[in-house]
Structure formats: structure tokens, C-alpha cells
Image 1 (cartoon, each protein chain N blue to C red):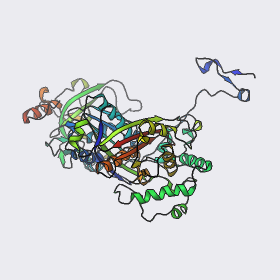
Image 2 (image 1 turned 30 degrees about the vertical axis):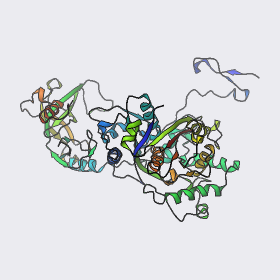
Image 3 (image 1 turned 30 degrees about the horizontal axis):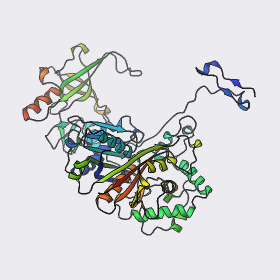
Image 4 (image 1 turned 120 degrees about the vertical axis):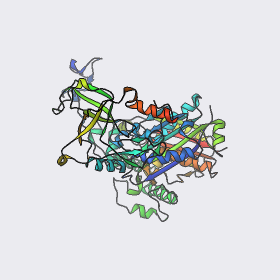
Length: 200
Length: 351
């Protein structure tokens, strides 16, 4: 039996010996096995209501039946308590920067997003959690926690039932929310005032 | 060994959850199972779930579903990318360690947004089998064909299993395929889906979820009038590659049943997770279930098969019958992987 060792480039380890019947075939060095699965994704009733309202420049949130906390976007539940939150509330398209991040690395293929860009948790007036968005209309270095911002919507003709209707959030020029009361700190203060949990 | 029991459960299965998210499905189910024994999440020592990102079409999808639990303040929590029965095994181990006395186990599957037959192909060997995209029915049909040709069972024998499931499923609100009038001749007249399997040989696909609450020792006795005590639980695995196994057998099912103590005493009932009639036949044979054991009084997975939950549903169904006083000793089984590759057996008793 005349075994044929495979080429060295196969890798480390002892040589592999093939039986004569396949000793002259080209060695398999790699395989590609593409995986593709398709899904028909249907948004939940809460998400559908939210997206349809968003197409007409309205921002909806869910109010918790437990303590009235408002979550945006609405998911139909209060995740802290594991209960249904069906009540919808309209929120204004204004708020403040709760926290933010300045990114200096470009996203490949996103020519519309020149670096540096600022992504931020926007705490809408009346909401109890942040809402992710881009901050523009000022230098990245000028963005700060507590800065008041408002939505810059796409032109009406380009609005749709998608998450992309707000181009970015721009400074309003109003006085800042004090850092001690900004973002999730507002939640902690509210919890302390009402004798709720630790509100971390 | 610490005594651990199923003290509560909740099951919901429907053909398709079109406008309901996983979270919205699980909120009422989790609350139902917890409140049935007067517990809130603050009373739960450990939470463990089972689900699949391949059904959700989204990575880390289970994190979103934690919204249904009420995981605030932060909880002790874990997840398996497997059927909830295997999450229950992890919770059982956690209870054995002794640091907690209660555990919440849940699992869910919403396969309707995708093609379940194709999704299941990605669990096959990724180099030589999965690239062929054999659908799940075809893979199960290979096994059924080998089983028929081995002479271990006849086509009529498989049809009898389908008929028994449809009869038992009558009265089970979570069953999708139930018929008091099902007959062997009727099943055999159905056109084959994947030769030799006919529609009634293959589990009815469902979306849904299942929740089980576990408790240890006297805590279980205080929560539930008649807890279903887990006397043995065992998980065994056969080779993954279909080509190296005798597909007419499931040695891991036999071993798991033996290690769980299935044959130590009489079994009133067995809830088997057999996604096809042929697989249910193999399981019954491997576990040596006798005529005095009622197999799948709920209709089993054939009546409604929620991916990632069907095994936990078997445990819930068996435990519920013990707690209701209709059974003293029951076996529940869960499988995972192609052609009964992995098998978990849980033996429960009333006191």
C-alpha cells in the first residue's frame, strides 16, 4: 500500500495518510457552507402602533400600571415587574442628553455618517428611560450630559413606519438639566422621592 | 440527594403567535405559574430558560424575553440554547447545591416566522450534512424507513401510535391535533409527506411556551398540596453524526431511563417527546415501557410540538397529573438534536 502524505500546508500535527484509491485527488483545504434562513417578521401590536405614530412625527411610550413609569419605545410590558403595560402615552420630541459616546471610527459603507459622530441616550421629557439617537448641529466636543435637545425629523415626504424618521437631535439652546438630575439619575431621584426601590 | 419537586406549571400552545411577541407570550404564563403557588419573582432563588436564536432570527433573543420575568432588582439567571427540560436540569442541579430553595424554569418557541424544517437543518453536521439542507422531515423519514425495514414495527404499528395520540389529545386545550374518531385506516390513507411519514406521523407544529416552578424539601410541601418529586433525572447523548449511529436505536434514551430509575418501580404514565411516531416507538422500546404504563396521556409532542418547549411541556404534563392525584409515578422525557440524539429522562413521584 502506497500512502500519500498530504502537503505540508494542511497544518500542524502528524501527516495524514490516504488510501491509494483517493491518493491522487486534490486535498480539501477548506469548505464554504453558506447558511441562509428567511423569516417573516411581524412586529408586535405595540411596535406597530409605535411605528405608525412615528411616521407622523409622534413618539409613543408605554406607561407602567405599577408606578406610572414611561418606557420608550413601547414594548407592551413593564420589564422591571414582568407585567403587561398596555397604556400608550404621547411624548414630546424634546429632551436632554442622559449620556453619550463620541465615535471616531467610521462605519464601513456609511458615507452619510462622517466621524466623529455622537450617539446618545436621549431622555425625552416625560419618559423614564433613554431613547437612542444621534446628536448633531453642534461640535462633538460641545455635547454634554444634561444638554437640551430636540428632534430633527426627515422631510415629511420621506417619513415612514421605520425607526429612521429622526435624522438626529440638535441643541435647543435652553439651559442644561443639572448633571445630578440628568439621565438615569432623574429616575433614581424620583424613586428616592416616592420611596421606591434603589433605582440604580 | 436533596428532594426537589415540581410545584407548579403553566403551558400555552397555539398554531401561530402572529402578533404576540415572546415577551407578551411569557408574561401571563410566568405570572400564572408563580402566582399559583403564591410566589413573586422576589421569592425565586434561581431562574433558568431555554430558547433558540435560530427561531427568533436574532442573536441573544433570550435577553429580551427576560422582560417577562421582572428581573429587577437583578436576579440570579441562566439560559440554555436547548429545550426547557434541559434548563430544568440546570435548575435542579442549582437546587442540589443547596444555596436556593426555589427555581423558575421557562422556555418558549415561536417557529412560525421561519421555516422550521429548514431551521432544524442547521443543527446537523456543518461540513458534510447541513450544506445539503436536508429538511427535518426528510431526516426523520430516513430513520422511519430504516425502522420499518428492520421489521421492528409495521406501518400499521406507527399509525396506531398516531391514533392513540389523537384520541388522548381530546380534552387537552393545548393540543392542535386531536380527534376522537381517528382510525388506523384513516391515518394510512393520508398521502405521505416524507416517505414513509404521513401528516399524522409528524408532530403538529405549534408556537408556545411552558413554565415550571421547582422547590426543594419542606418549601415544596408548603407551596403545594401534592408536589411531584423528582426521584431521578438524567441526560445522555449519542453521537451527533447520523452515519455512525444505528438510527433504529437510541441507546442514550435507554441509559437515561435506567440512570433516572425508570424501571425501579411501576410507571403509571410516560410523557415522551417523540416528534414522529417512529421516534415515539423507538423511545417506548428503549425505555422498556410496559402495557401498564399509559404513554402520552396529553397526546404527547405529536399533538403539539413547540420547539424548545415540548420537552418541558412533557415534565409539566406528567407533574400536573401527579399533583392532581391521577398518577403516583410518572416518567417525562425530552429530546434534542437530530433523530433522538440527546435524551433526558425525569422520573417523578407523588408522596
